[in-house]
Image (cartoon, rainbow, N blue to C red; front, side, top):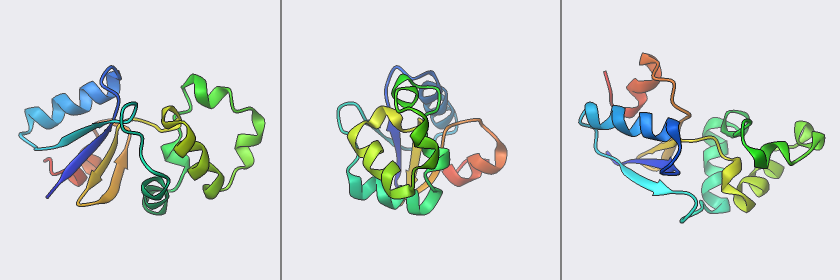
Length: 118
């Protein structure tokens, strides 16, 4: 099993997720989306798995700068926006064996099971 965690190192939620993974002895690879933004193809695959709505970083400045038209956007418009600005992506995003399995980190047991936890 390969677990990848996409996010940015100074994100508090990413730090919590990484601490949890390490406390539970779960191997992962961290991908800094500022240095290695995901491709449009990757983002499209993630949207196929999770849909665009939960992937939106609604608390970020990039999201607020988009204006009201974003409320009507299709998944393909979100794919384009995420590809142009990775800061629009909610963090962290977890990919297991090449498939997006979860975005964000709230430490609910049923979600953590997707990552190989309890």
